[in-house]
Each structure stands twice: as structure tokens, then as C-alpha cells.
Image: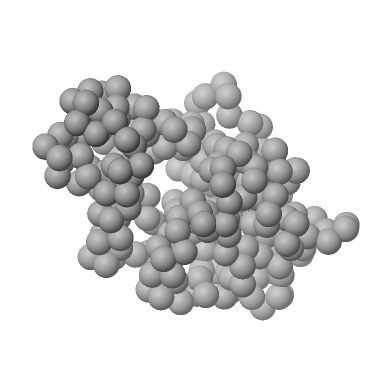
Length: 227
């Protein structure tokens, strides 16, 4: 049976952006637009962006301000800039083509058939996830969504995953969590999810860091044979 590893677990937790859907490029472009609209320009490529974004919750803010000091002088309140980025991202969601990442459709269909307990735990807002779910209906088969409004502390803090575990897991349940970032993996492990799986490209910068927790790594869901 394809995805026979699913039988081992009762609860499945998923990150969202960059794991289930190809939205990371849109987040990158949203930051570029936000800075450009203020007359500043990020010279990063996409790999540099994900290398920073996937390590810490404050990495993008700190690095953008460090490399664009004139932007900091103009607007030192990051929440203002982040709101502008969110607005750009939501426009991009309407403009862009959204796609599931390889193997996601098959895994979600298998989970639906077996009626497994499952949730998305994401830094995206409810409005953003609803727009994407409308464009990609298979995502609507996931019953529970923990979005940014549901918790205070972003990953790598474990709060969001603790909420999901408390809502879904019963005594004796085997829980598995999937992430595409180092900070997401740390959040899973610190929430007590011992079975944490990293899914990201084989050339991702985070794979070469000494700080990366030792967890199973695959480039797509299709590669998973046993976890």
C-alpha cells in the first residue's frame, strides 16, 4: 500500500507555507514589493530569503533592517512594515498560481480515506489560508486549522503545536509532525512531538547547519517509505 507509514500514527500535524503549498515564493516577492514601494531594494535571491526565514521568527526583520538602515530610519516600527508586506502577499495570492507541492494531494487523500486526525499549524492568517483553501479544495479535507490568530508566540516557540496536540491527541496516540524549516522542527520537538519530519530541498541552506536537530529528512512526501 502506498503511504503505508500512515497506519503507524493517529495524529498528523502539518506546517503550511512551503510544505503543503508553494507560497514561499509569494512571501519572498511580498517582502521585495514592500521594500520597493518605499524606495528600497532587497538584492537577495530566493535561497537567501528562505535561509533567513526558516531559522528564526525575527530573522527577516533583523536582516532587512541591518541591510537597509535607511528603511529603519524611515519606519522603525516593524509591525507597520509587516502589515504592508501582508497586504502585498494577499494581492499576490489573488494574482498568482497556487500549486500543491509534490505528494501533498496523495497524502491528504490517504488521510481522508482513513479518517486520521489531522491539523495545519501555520503562521499564516485565517484570511490567507481561506483564500488558498478556496483555490485548492483538497486542503478543505483537513478538519483543523491553527492559524496566527490562535496563538501568541510564533515558531520556534512550541505554543501553536501544543494547542494542536491538546485538541487532537488522546492518551496513547502516536503523533507525527511535518515541517519545512528548522524553527518549525524545534517548535514540534519542544511541544513534545517526538516524531518530527523535515521536508525541504536537498540544497536548502539549513541542512548544513550544526544547529539543525537530527530528524528524518525528505525532499518530498513521495520519498517517504518509513518514519
